Image 1 (cartoon, rainbow, N blue to C red):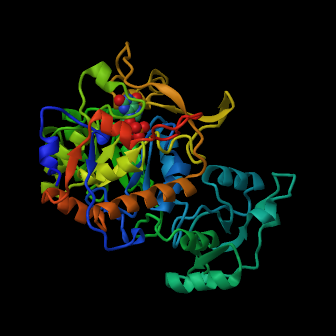
Image 2 (image 1 turned 180 degrees about the vertical axis):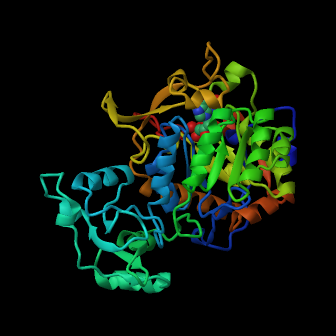
Image 3 (image 1 turned 180 degrees about the horizontal axis):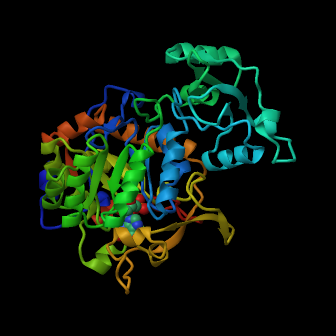
Length: 495
Ligand code: XMP
């Protein structure tokens, strides 16, 4: 029954997620047997196929930390100064560690106010104190939150409040042994010292707890959470890139609405030479020609979408773009030949859309509005007509462009007259992503189970072999597939 993807998509009309359905397959496994692990660039793998958009109302460090803990990844937006964006990346990289090899250190001559600055900037306390305040000098104490909590006078020297009765572990100890000492010591931190008593690394008890609670977390080889960051092709962003790489960013995302440009191709070539170990996701593209050019220039992954986003008006203002399912289908066909993943970016409104994006060849979805309005998204809640809302805006909205970052993405930075390609608005409170994302992902597992596939690679194999069957959906069928015939006093929040 049904049709192959090529019959559905290779036609004279672009279509999107709502325009088709996937025919069910054979089930001989449970939803929890579905493995959603996926590769989003040549070298970056994540456990859940979900990426948060680099938008200033979606991804800053708190969102990126949450995404990585849960098994996805967040891309820090670049509507920030270079220093601020790099600091956001650093916050994520320092959040969870095996051995913290570059811990922040202070000297006995620093004050409690310096501890306050550190907790504010990085979100942690528990600072080792060395003789001269530098790493790899003699460890003399440690200051934890509880040593300074109730101290009114923040000018007191740390030498007065630090704990000097220390449990340490020797340099060269294995992670497993160190974990064991930390567990037994009942202390918050375990400093690792060399024979001369000089501090070489630090371990944190809260990391042990986090490791236990988030076994799916997306981590690098050093057990730090992974994070991506958006950058532009503008020449003055070369400094930004250098700084992000220096702070340990795992993935650079070249953020452009139309990625098929000399500027992006030159940048990709340059980056692959300068930083062969940092993956670069290029884009955005919607055609095979665009994508092929970026892959040849060195892209490790492609971001697909021009205008499908919930706040996008690109298709109306620029006349260019492509219906999203068609865009993902074509680019995925091309990229599969190069073994490069494509990411379906924008226009995802519900679980079904995520599953469909994967079924037409996407290796993961990138989402903005779906995660905006959550507790972990930037910004404060406000009320309108009794509804709890958070702001959400397109990066090419006039509002965001005035901040700078949006203007770079849409190549209008140097233009006097700015034409908006996005709008600003608000979205309803979604609560915490620690509940919402597991719910979404369990839904996707059910969807793959209904299709009859246990993982994303086998779904893609079936797609390319025309074993996965599709059927177009008329407008009447779409109406029938949604909720109908009920008295509705409330609009649905998603979908
Ligand atoms: P969703 O639908 O998940 O889409 O909210 C998020 C994606 O939309 C893109 N984006 C924009 N596109 N004008 C556009 O045409 C804009 O102002 C804009 N801001 C973000 C971006 O690709 C994001 O990941």
